[in-house]
Length: 427
Image 1: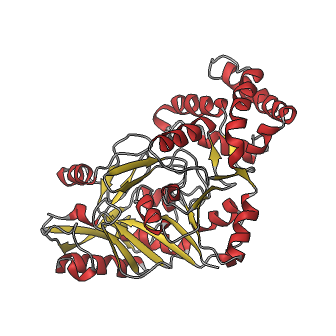
Image 2: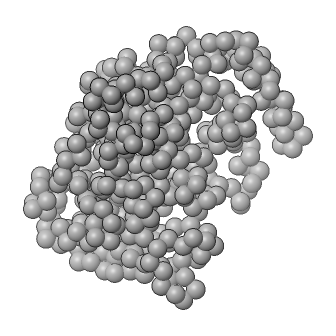
Image 3: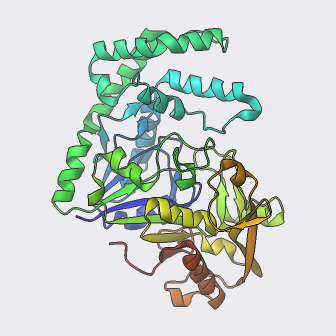
């Protein structure tokens, strides 16, 4: 019953797509359990690069069944566009399964997201404007539209009417926007039903039966630990739970069935959007990390904020997720620095703090305390084993492992599928 959870251990964009793809050939199911098309994974296969936003990375692995779980919010137009793009490139997407309980991102959710963010001005959160937050809000407020509702026009119409009763009041009276017509929304959503229907399934049943049959199931989180709605840098977070517990609720699988939890760590730190970021760099080093690492959001197209590795948030991720392993990515990006600073603690109000501050105010004012490790200049992209790495690169990895609290079982030394050093098998 090997069930693995794979998630980001920082603010997202750690390279989860590469890690999922590495395991894809060995697993039977890859499951997205939260988020929507606000997440982005880049997977490089040979000379082909694939940018995935909503679909699980396992869709690129022959023989693997990709699953969109009940905890995901689905924009039908994005889903069909992404499927079409992969089909045109010869990727078989026929095995995809979508939970009938997943919630639909409606056109009015996207509208509300965009106008709300503009209204906030300087206080904006930095959302992607894709309707993710409003859709999760509808879910919690029990006025959401689920995939299964596309197949009952009467229920769908009633639910859209209920949702727009309040939203149209807000749009017209607060934001000075035109009201959205119920019939127009219903017609658009029904237009997706036939195309999506072949993929819709009772994914909770499918996944639990797969585990009972000793199939290997990999649960793939979008975003990262520090963007978790409960455990992240609130309010600058996503609207769901990318942490390990979210895999259980977002896929309908009990916690006793999870065997390993793998955290993806970038060898430095990045984040997209607003919010505190203690190790952020505003100098030539930060620009070099951005340039060499190609740090631009897969989904947003925005430049990522870059900084040195933060061991404090890595330890925090280990704790809240119960991490059993780390996959360290983009080690090659650090090649060329004579000295590499690593944040080992924070200074808050003149005091050294070893763990993530409980208070958001304290975290906002936290200053990094650095230790400097010697760098390396040798090209590491051809390394096939840990011993192939330069001594200083080996020491850097060992130091991060000790500081972070879980073993580093794989290392990414380049963007390609085969540019990975596997120290310990995840299976």
